[in-house]
Length: 233
Image (cartoon, rainbow, N blue to C red):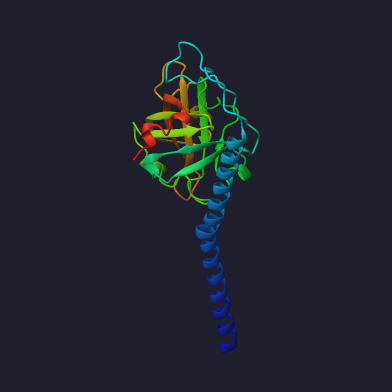
């Protein structure tokens, strides 16, 4: 009887140890690896941009304002590859994540993912991006802190795009795919424009719901002009 009790106790300790190690792996080690992967994606982008020729002067369409998308060379959107970097000052001035094309599981392990069926960065329509709330670097862990008026800044290597949040976080279910429509019905927008949608899971460690933020393109400026005001401390 004592042998059985001791065996069961040892088994429980072993199982408990395995569970603790798994939790450590999920909470810590996957985050460490994801941060390295995202940093690598950003480094590759910056190296790529440094090797690309600068756009010719005067590429912006005549008569356009600073809030219009520039008419420079189109960004490269290749499935699973990075094409932009996102900054959200509300989440910290050191917060920056690569944006990759597509929202496949493997893609979201490397950074944020652009819904391929939505508009491109800065274009008329809805540029929609998804990110993990937890695991794989926890890119949108503090998503609920986002507020109206907050800046979301992106760059494609030639242009800074500053969006301003108009509504959110809005909670809905995963089947509510209308949130990434060109003109999202529940966003409050009433006419076509240059919009941004951010999506992540809710609750923090679940996926029964989604949190949504909508923003409009507030301004653009060439990278050569320096950082936009939203990123200056």
